[in-house]
Amino acid sequence: MSEQTIALVTGANKGIGYEIAAGLGALGWRIGVGARDRQRRETAVEKLHAAGIDAFGVPLDVTDDASVATAAKLIADHAGGLDVLVNNAAINGITGNLPQTPTTVDPATVRTIVETNVIGVIRVTNAMLPMLHASASPRIVNISSSVGSLALQTTPGIDMGPVPAAYLASKTFLNAVTIQYVKELGDTNILINSGCPGLTATDFTGFSGDRTPQQGAAIAIRLATLPDDGPTGGFFDDAGVVPW
Ligand SMILES: NC(=O)c1ccc[n+]([C@@H]2O[C@H](COP(=O)([O-])OP(=O)(O)OC[C@H]3O[C@@H](n4cnc5c(N)ncnc54)[C@H](OP(=O)(O)O)[C@@H]3O)[C@@H](O)[C@H]2O)c1
Image (cartoon, rainbow, N blue to C red; front, side, top):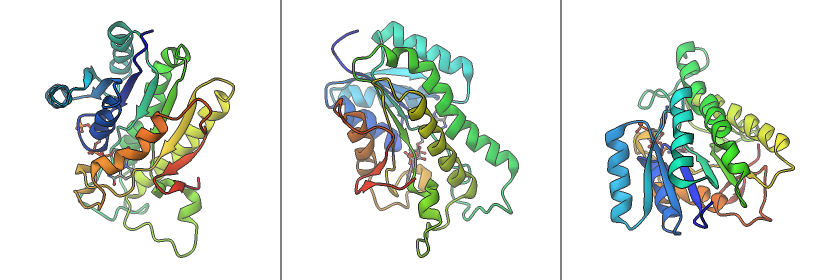
């Protein structure tokens, strides 16, 4: 494997994912820009190249087995391996239509969101694991959200706002999955952590967040660049530890 650190960011064509790619690329890393739409992917790669970043496009739909398998092969062929995986891609299903409640949500919406936000992470992670195992300092960063924290959801006095129910539960599900990966891979050198970007102005929130995508990307960049003796199995935002 080359000495240059290789990272894959899923959903890197816009929003927080793009800024994670830009931030890691600015460190001199080689960045796989995982994106499902060819035009949006190529535009992002061109923008990163214009900023002097060593980026390459990775066609990737996290809901599609064949797409994910092809992405893993492309990274192996093109970059020779993978050191850091940032699972960022997600949907909330109903932007602009809040609140969404458990009693009103369409089961199909729940299924679609879980397919992307949870099963997509499992699918991509498992496809990339052989390359991560071969890395000297592998990292997995799962982009979660504090709204998925059961501890915060059940703390009296904390109002999570009108968060879509299916999206919120998908992040709780993802947190549980992240912990299970940590348990299974705990005796390897892979550091696995979750990060919450905070309420960020992107398409995802109808641009209602008070943080910029660059600010939202900061926690993922910190977790992707942890030293070898850094934490694993944690959930963090810019302020510190988020309770599971
Ligand atoms: N924004 C916030 O306030 C906030 C707060 C907490 C956590 N988060 C989390 O931060 C992450 C990024 O959110 P964001 O605000 O940057 O959202 P965004 O601007 O909507 O970007 C989401 C990205 O995910 C991609 N994506 C969706 N489904 C995909 C699929 N099946 N395969 C591949 N890529 C797919 C999108 O690609 P397309 O362009 O093709 O749709 C897009 O690149 C998400 O995990 C989100 O849950 C966001």
